[in-house]
Length: 403
Image (cartoon, rainbow, N blue to C red; front, side, top):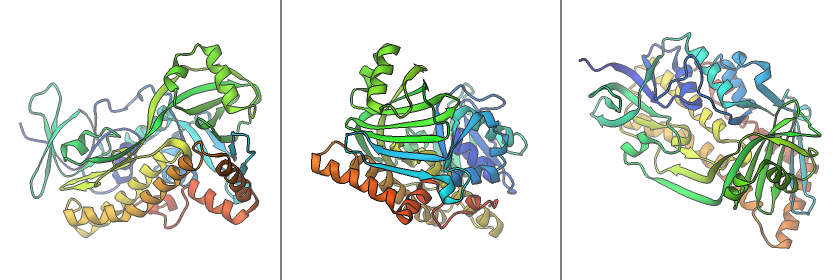
């Protein structure tokens, strides 16, 4: 049986992989999106929520995905409140209207965004292939992907393989690429809660003695809470009443009382970076290349910037007849992503370290710094521009232009 050939195979049909497939779909290239359970026509059930930065929303709108999300499925953030819950009274506010934007960001669910991406993909020539990555062979001009399917010997050949298959990337492992990994020594508990005093367009980042707590509005009186704890396993095992009591005491009364919680998810908090993002005929993007602490909600937004830069460069190469699977071309792409990834990693990691439990004088200085930021419009704008994903230079997708 003849081995199917595609110009580009994207391994991993989650948010980042599907976004790249859509960003490349208008080009005169044969694109294949490979996933064990491609999300067409219905998405996989997934309650996770994401903070979509203002810049990322522009990119998703340019791809034609954002208008397909129902207004009931996303919540704009008009205000972000950052505060120190250790008793030092540090407080900073960011307001969308002060910055001249309709929202600082948007909260939406994984399932809703994935469904929008696949609905848009359904109107393209992109091949959606069900299959699990099972191995890799390469020669000078092609990569051959072996599939771990029931069908023995199933494989795909391509000019470029994109690993968008997450933190535990099989593509990365097949290339022999190691990772630099930092364990924060905590786990995150994620749950959706009803609250008695909602502020539907305000997101919170509260730094406690045991780790940060993010609260993201998801509509009406509901918030998604992401709680960093050294004893997360114990918290997950609490009955609902005890859990809500613990959460209320840790977060404080900014949203009134906690009234009810969804089933709780738990996952380790790590920072991870692949030692290289490219290999012969292979490029890694999203969490396969870099995984961040979720403290500032930057993970998917950083991955979408990978998508934007890679798609723009592939488009330029395709039009010029350049081999975008060539090693020198791939290394040039990696260099183009270094500064953004390094700066975003330092930003998120710095927040975690700054608000880690420390001696009282350091905690007092920390609270003073938050108050100082709140009183300096220029500094506050710099912080907001970074969190909104609008720091120049911006790739074409983030400026509303298809690659």
